[in-house]
Image (cartoon, rainbow, N blue to C red; front, side, top):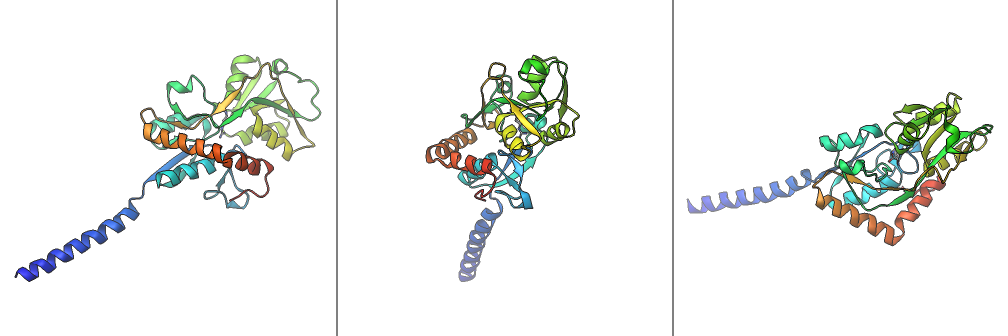
Length: 260
Ligand code: ARG
């Protein structure tokens, strides 16, 4: 009887151990990045569908992969409208926003930002033959396409008398410009540069350093998520210190040869 009990206990113990180890595999945590994958070189859908993570590529995706590694978690990418990302974060459907999001005082009332990881400014993009726009003041009375909820949108709405057309996706704003339906797009510098490089005969960039202020991108988390924020800050600082961030930026802006 005793022997039987002992064997039973052993089996139970063994079962529990096996159960635990397989349970650990299943219970690997999941971390969800919210982004708007229309913003190369920061987040975009890779040509051919083979990106840094699933079909997604870009600097923010590469940072998110490192964050997931640091957490020992599986990364999921939630690709949605930029203007809804802060609400998605607050609603809990995503854990952090990595979307070339500019650190702004109004946003800091709703989310916590990481340390800055990229500096930007707004550029205007116009048709090559457009001679009438040379400063941001020339946007008055023109049709201006922007991505809804972005700093470009806020500038066009608050600082100009332009007819502002907000689009869900940055790519739609550029399509409106290429289609001749608007006079200009106001958008982040690196994204403007990349798009003009892809359409060198049709589009050009106009800078106005007096009108557009300096911006810095940060990764956003919900209030109170201090452990996650610490991990994100450590990952960004390590990627900056090792030169990985600069190297990735080079790869994603040059286009070819990105280290997928
Ligand atoms: N930096 C700008 C902002 O924070 C635009 C960001 C747009 N990001 C995107 N993934 N489409 O408003």
